Image (cartoon, rainbow, N blue to C red; front, side, top):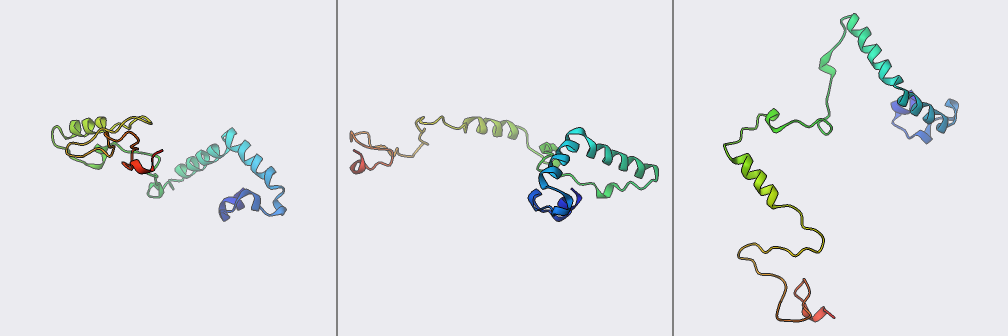
Length: 128
């Protein structure tokens, strides 16, 4: 298992001297499910804490899995801005499939209502 994670290789690339890759992978899954790795990590942290060797400067958090609230980033919003953003988001709800588009003010529809075979592209000649 250590070789696999150190090399970054796939499970199937484990050298034969370590045994069948499927056996190694199954053992890894069993240990993961049993909490062996968490227990090892907690034990190492406890031992380091006893020796006063814990260095929190090495701790990192990936922001893709730990989202922060916008207040945590120091964002300052004026009064009513958040309400306006929420209202705008509410208005932009996705249409259900096949639902007609709402035209924006000042925009013309692509449909040509006077022609009986008009399609969404406005090209009546290609419609059959």
